Image 1 (cartoon, rainbow, N blue to C red):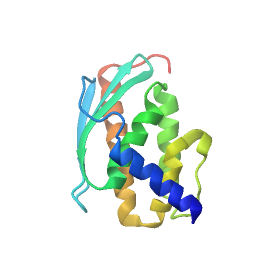
Image 2 (cartoon, helix red, strand yellow):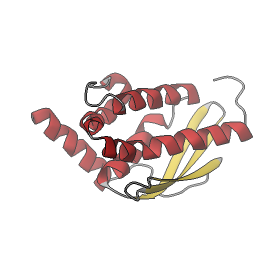
Image 3 (cartoon, helix red, strand yellow):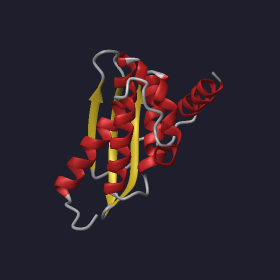
Length: 150
């Protein structure tokens, strides 16, 4: 239970002090809604060549969706698009594990705190909302400004 408590603290810390919140200039913007619970996010991504230069967002919803957006910002900003996509895939795998995976802390850092969320299908959508928005915004940005080398 001690580990679960630590994970809850990480999620609450990101919820109370979100990283990247507040819309800034970007190359692409998307708006996603979780129709199950009403969580929503408007997310912008800005690329600098092959690097994710910024992820900014405005969102409303539960602590899980809000904290997940903050963790996303920490994990992908400063990485190449390829590295960020690999992190996104690792997070998706963790969320689809139904509580069976712990996640690689070297790759996912604070995102491993969401391992327990994967046991609750209704909450998985909350945790994935910002990640799916980031994936779509990045694809949109790349379509408008293709990167030759990643």
